[in-house]
Image 1: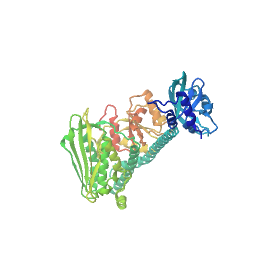
Image 2: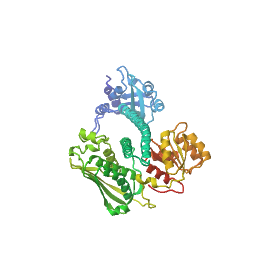
Image 3: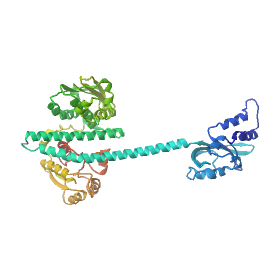
Image 4: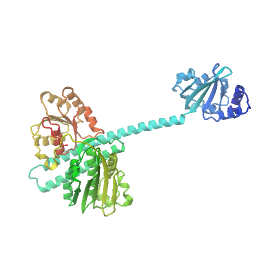
Length: 541
C-alpha cells in the first residue's frame, strides 16, 4: 500500500515550514488530518499541471497499484487514463477544471470498475505560485441507489399501468355480458301477465347479476384507492334529496327480509345544500346499509342523521347506521377495514358472502371527506357504524325535481318522439337498448360502427347519439372527433362497459357530453337522455 501520508507531509513542510510558534497547528498533525479526510484529493501546481501531493483515499478510490506514483503524473494524464467515456462534464474535466468549481464525474479505476464522484476545486497562492486542490467524493453507492430507485419506480409505474389496463379490460369484458343479462331481465319483467314463478326466477337472475356487478365495482374502487387515484368531485346537491334516494333504494329489500327500517333526520336537513361528492357519499351509505341488511336476520336497522354544527360557510353532519345483527368481536374490529377481510367464522363467511371490500372502501372514502369511520359492536348484539363530515355550504341555482325511481320510470313520457342514433357493435347490447328506447316512444336508427354512423349523419338529424367506445373499423373516440369537426351541438353520450380512471375528464376531452356505464338501470338511462334532450331538458340529478 502507498504510504501517501509520508509523501504529503514533506510537501506541506516544504510549502509552509515546520512552524512551532504559539497558536500555530503542527503541520505533521495537519498533514495526518488530511489523510483522514473523507474525500480523495490531489494538489496541483497550476503552472506545470504536476501532481505534487495526494492522500491515501486517492489511491484507494482509483484502486492504484504500488508501482503507480501519482507524483510523476500530471492531472490531465489522470483524466485521460481514468475518466469514463460517458462521464458527466467530460470536456471540462479533460480541458482543465476551473479554479472554483463543483460537479460530478464518472471514472473507470485501475481494476476496470466504474465509480462516480462529486468533484470540487479550489485554489490558494503561496510563494507566487497558484496551487489547485481537487477533491473526489465517492458517490457510487448513492448513484447506484438512485438508479435502482428510479428503475424500481419505473417498473412500479409500468406495473400499475398494466394493472389499470388489465382491470379496465376485465371490467369491459365482464360488464358486457352482464349488461345482456341484466338488460334482458329488466325487459322480461316489463312483460304483461308474467306468471309469478317466472317473475321470481327472473328476479333471482337479476339480483345475482347485480350482485356480481357490485363485486366488480368494489374491486375496481379498491384498485383506485390502492393506487391513490380515487378523488372526490365537487358538485352542488341537497342532502335530504341525496338521503331519500339512498333510503328508497333499500326500502323494498328491508321489506322482503321482514326487517324494520327506521330513519330519523332533523327537519332542517331539507334546507341544507352542500358542495361535495354526492355519488361517493351515497356509496358510503349504501355500503353501510348493505352490510346492516346482510348481517341482520331479525330485528331492525336504524339510520340516524343529525346536524352537529352549522354556520354561514359549513355544515357538519353525522351519520350512524345501527343494526341488531350478529355483531363483531372487539378483537376483530380493527380488521374489518382491511381489504378482503372476513372477520366472522368460516360458516358465517359462507352464509353471508361478499368480498370484504365494502368497509375498506367506505373507510377510505370517509377519510377523503375529512372524517373517520368508527364502529361499536358486541357479538350477538349488532353493530353501529358512524362518522361525521364537515360539508361546504352551497346554493342550488334552481330547485330540483323529485328523482323518479325504478318502479315509476315507465310513466315518464318526455322521451316520446325523440330521434336517437344508437352506435353499438354488440348485437345483444344494441337489441336491449333499442327495445327500451322504443318502449319510451323514441325514434331509433342503428349503426354498428363509427363509419356507418357518419354515413347516417349525412342524411339524418338526431336529438341525441348513444355511442359505444370499443368498436371495429372506427371506435367511439375517432367517431366523435369526426362528428365534432362539423357538429358541436348534438349531444353525444359514450355508452360503455369500460370503467376508466378519471372517466369524466377523458370522456369530455374526447368530445362526448357525458357517458352511460353498462350495465345500466333503465330509469337512470332515461333520466340521462332527458337531461341532454334539446328543448325538453329536465334536471333529474
